[in-house]
Length: 327
Image (cartoon, rainbow, N blue to C red; front, side, top):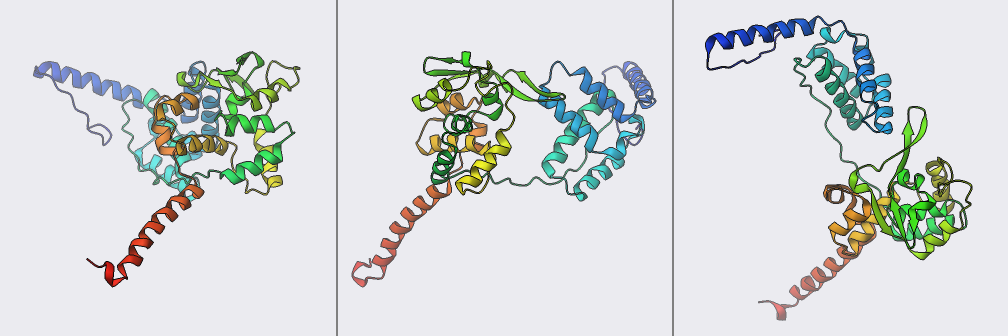
């Protein structure tokens, strides 16, 4: 037992086992004396992974470092205890932080401590997850959004997201050279980094894909000014705020720009498009995202099938009231 934590050492030879235990204890003792502050450990970890992690991931890590578990940041990592960490988690929950963001911040804390204090046993209780209901625009709402965006510079990005299912970062990263014939090569993204927007590869290997592009979208791409190699111009950033304005103009309750991608996936699902084709088109490595997030039946489809079931059940019920039909 060391600092209330149990460690196990085994070996078939008792003397060898004792020697291993001594070395383990010495290593723990040395680790416990490291005077590194938690905020310094965060900085070292983030900086050391700057070239291997996505710029957006690095940016999020720095946000977590600045805004979460601040009471722990000035503590030496050798002085951290399970109770201190649990209290910090509870404080974030009481402050109204969402369970998802707390879990993300805790995940970073865990990997930092594993790197710089590997013998520390971290096993905290986290806030219970909440079920996030995804809003998917109906076909009627999409028609109104498309109509409101028609002829504006936002028509193209809205169609790329809701028709082809591209992510906002992929739309920003689309270049004229990526359009070959009637196909689009999705091979890069533009994301937020520490110092503004930066270009990177796709979210995953599966994200690098070719998509057949309809004439309606090809015409809009051809009509774009060629003052930049990017179809939307150099790192166009106003997709989100202006999309809300388009929704307002269309008389539609504003949703996230990413919900347009949900619509594209849900429409494909409702048409019976095989998951394998959807995965390729949407840029997913597995079908987990399709099953857990995108394959949500839209409200209008729910009503249609509910009415179909009710009509059938109603006919059976009415027949049961007719004595002549009784068995």
